[in-house]
Length: 123
Image (cartoon, rainbow, N blue to C red; front, side, top):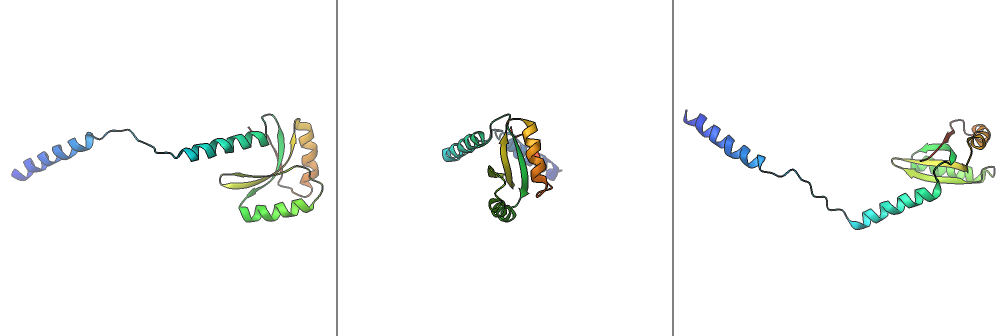
């Protein structure tokens, strides 16, 4: 009987302390991190504005993307080539097109060499 009373008393004291904890979380964020994130957003907005189409040729790891990028640079058919990192993949995109029709025309040319290419409209 004494054990039960002590066990109950111990549980009341212990759980009373755990219930007294606050449920707020304090996040200490380095101001430099915030600045870097803002710069990344700005760079992404400058690269592709809303309403433009592009053709994505590749999405994958860094090594494969670098090899393909070197191969693409040797090919003089492609004008604007963008090497982009969006977590967790590196992406290679070609061109900025205002109309979808122009993007489709370019996609037909690109698909001859890169069959997995597709049209993308970044936000």
